[in-house]
Image 1 (cartoon, rainbow, N blue to C red):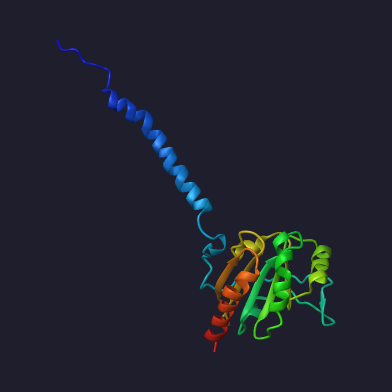
Image 2: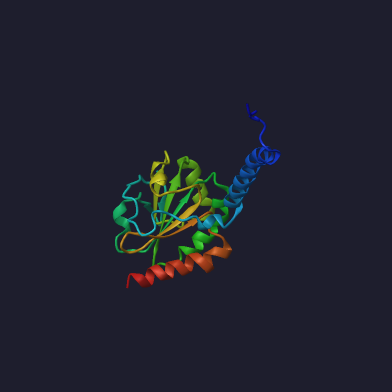
Length: 197
C-alpha cells in the first residue's frame, strides 16, 4: 500500500499565508489612492447635460432686496437665462469665505445668481446675507435637504451653472475661491453665455 501525505509542500503553505496579506495591502492601497487622489472639486456630476431639477422652493421669509421681497425658486426662472445656482447655509464655514466673491460676481448682470439655502433657520440665513450682502435675486429654502439631493449635492457649498436652455452645464464642488472664481467659474459662465447666442 502506498502512503498518502497530508502535508502540502512548504511553498504552497507559505503562499496561503502571504496571499491574503497581499490582497489586503493591494485593496488598502487602492482605497487610499481613491480617497486622497485627485481634486475633490472635480467630482463628476451625473446631472451635467440634463435639465435642472424641477423642484419649486419657498422664499426665505422676510428677505428683501431693493425694497421688494426676494422670490423663492420657481423652475421656470431658468428658461432663457444663464444661472449660477449656489447651495449654501449660514452654518457652513466655507460659505462665509465665498460670500464676498459671490457678491462681487453678482455685479455682472448678464446672468442671474440663485441661492438654495440648505437646512438653515430663516433668522440665521437672513443674518448671514445681511452681514455679507445678498448676491441672490432668488433664494429657495431647502429646509429638509430633499431638493439638494435632487441637485446631486454632496455637501455645502456647491455651485451649479445652468445654461439658457435650462440644462446643468457645470458643477463646482466646494467653495468659490479667489483661485477658481477667475480661472474656472468665470470661464464656464462665459462659455454658457456664448452658447446661448
